[in-house]
Length: 476
Image (tube, rainbow, N blue to C red; front, side):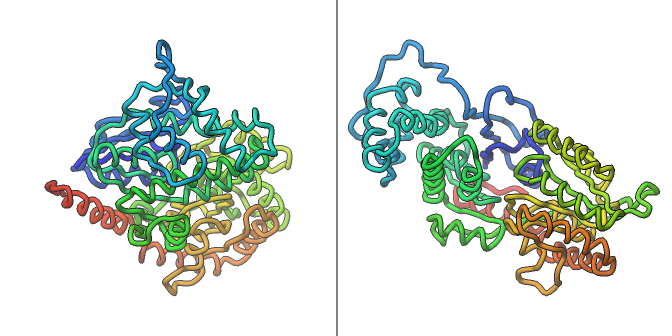
């Protein structure tokens, strides 16, 4: 069985929880052939991998969401047939969509994306949508916004897909569109595995964004909802990391019978017997933030909170451990913030092997604005370290427990609440017995339900079921 992993904005270009999960999943099934279909922003990132691809990855294909219509020269303008016009009209106007006609329009004809977006048919459809819902706006602004909304989708619809038996999309969104299109055109199977809920994450980002204003945010949000609904409708199976995420998928239109919870897993053995504290750590209480230095991790709030916490407990030391090249401007601002606050006990390590540092930490911390089920919390638990985390994703369940009686394994705070985050650091710094007990509680929790072998067995059964249903011989 050939599996095409469809990813957006992560593996194999960027390190992080989702990328790590994809890499370990591929390594877990060496007898399966994998293809990577990676959605990235633009061609300048092409081939710039941060992972050494496993031997069972045979192909890598790239889709660029910020690109140009390379083949538009020499093409005549093409008006849409009636069925094509109605299908695209329904998509723009938020009606029941004939996706198969849309897929075939962009896959099986030589239509130019530029000429389509600047053409009479698109103008007429957008004008109707405008007259129905947004006539109070300036039409020229509205038209250019809708063009910008649809251009990346059209790049996805125009992509020539590699052939595979199973398309495993690690999100809905554009990845889900590609997987759905493959299912319709090739008759393949479709598996969706969401780490965060894509639609909700994009909605949260848009509500905070400065680049889009007012009702235009709603137009973008509606677009992501349409794409996710498509993926849920076409998928054979949709997985999530925890129960509340599954409930969100159902609320967003995913049929309940398609859903399944498949928790994250970490290697307990890999994180045992780690090097402990060094002479440098004597008299220190180390707080470890294992993360990518990006806005979604809200490192600036973490630094501000640490500043207040250290005023109350001078033994505290903050270690910010992870790559700094994904959002270089933001990383630079974080370092400037540390300097402006006069903090001498904040260390930026860059990309590391966590086994070299985790044993030295007294606790881990995440102040993210959005998460799924963070591997860094689970990895900290495997090393007997309690966690402080904002109340996003499954952090509350991981720290306080969902279906076990192991007890609290850290402290949950509200997002962007500097005082709460500072107080959590001070509380764990001042109470060593509590800190150690929380670390043990976390260890028991990760051993009971979040081991790598548990995750592998779940996906072994999923992949085997797909393989058997397609008549392939399953090999271990």
